[in-house]
Image (cartoon, rainbow, N blue to C red; front, side, top):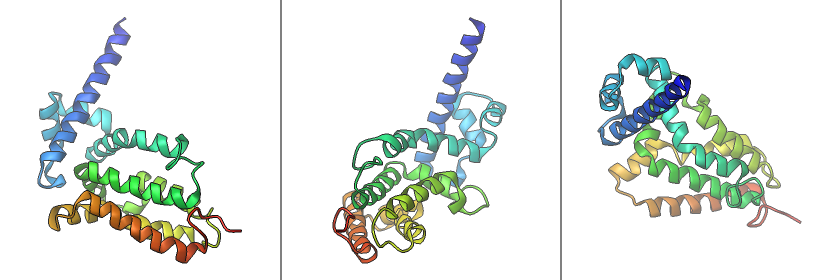
Length: 203
């Protein structure tokens, strides 16, 4: 019984920390201004608890991001069209990019914080390599695509959190327009590299 209570307390503490961090990043004018001290105070836990559970600020941000993106990841890996693996490749490329942009729009503060953390390349981050691998594999199912690896990088660049933040925050572009512009961009790119019809299938 004691062990179960400790696990329940740990789960509640984790949820409280993630909720507090999410709120702080959402309200902060800059992701860099949110510290571990701020999160600990907002969550009502000791700073040591944060470091034991998440390692450091980057680990906390990654944990929060993963918690938010897991439903989308499940849909991509095992769900139905337009995101799941059974989707026709052309349609899936469009669906994946729209989903990536939609997630960034819904989680602007968190996505921007994650892109800003750490000193390494953002292109080596686990969340980016997952998106890139999935998109590349889908592109390579389209006949005549010569370099799915590069094209996946180029398409994903249009969904970067800093670009989304600039378009939404500085240029005041609506979410609907961003998604429409991205869909138009993808439709222009794919025929030129795919040499096939809408569904990416050629005779």
